Image (tube, rainbow, N blue to C red):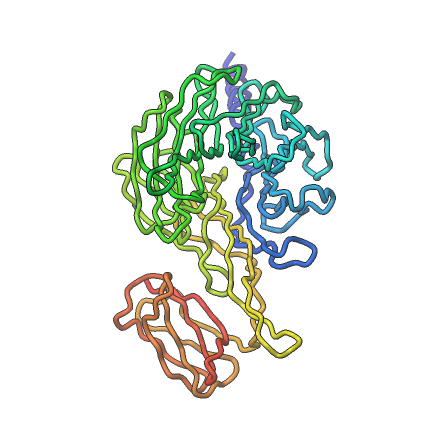
Length: 480
């Protein structure tokens, strides 16, 4: 009897411990900072990433100027080369809870692909064959295994062409169940996000344009649909946003809806709202001088991560205050806006963003042609959500072949900056993360001691300029 009891306990322990072992195997440790494309002539010249999904096979399914699948170490597995219909269509990648890959194009074409990018089926979701400037902004799987897809299209409203919210409900095979064209005012309306509600209906988040006496105004609108797509009510939030605002939504841990709107103008602010199932705002907070760039995620403790243009920020769920902000720096010292955030199984997060570096080339006539070189990045941030571990950095190729060594880095009192090739009459500039110059040092030779002096702890950038004021290199330093 005693032996049977021991055996029984052994098998019970084995049974309950097995899922833990499987989970750890599906969550491999990997830290990376990767740039996966920039100005490749076979792709779009303006490279950006606006969405990221974490897949069940430990990969990253991303989209922006094209779709791509990235392995756990940040290496590209495929990038839409098999299916040219993805390219140039502003495709939104979606990895569903059922473990399947989907792509929704801006013309409301839903494509089911497998993990190797082969097309399983394609469905066209527009209610009419129209040239109506359709745009898709969001897709999510519903509790019945189907999809709710939100965007906009243009219709002729009397004598004016107006943007209208367009919502499509499909079954699990992508077949259309119903479509709805919605308008909350006589002016332009654009749908950005939909969320299934407890009663089987949907909350639709939109940008509503209202005509004013002096100028038009834009506000966040909330429309409630029932399970059949019939409109039940709509509300317009009181706080104004601006033309071109980027709007993102997310279902919160308690079932409410978080909405963040950015201001895409010289008036840079971020509006954070949380609404309940009745469309009432229970949180309405503005963060001035901070531009929201698309990243939105809620932590287990209820706090929020917001992807800003200049950093990743944690917002307290209780006080709504910014607890901390973390900047991300590219391979040549440029700032990287946070466009998308997703949680990982090891309590870390993966971040997607892109940067634009102002560069130039010499044309055939000897003149300079200036342009922005857009580069896309993936970062993995550790479980503190503050520090980036770097492995296998793909550095941008610099014009100068000179190399620089900074040691120690990080440092508390002083560090040695050494260049491989001796320089004469050079200038060493120290700038902070927002680009302000904090120190300039005239420099000749191949070594200089940099003292902490009055510099506060934080991240800085060392830029070396030659005697003709041409930048030779940029490196990041950290003062503890």
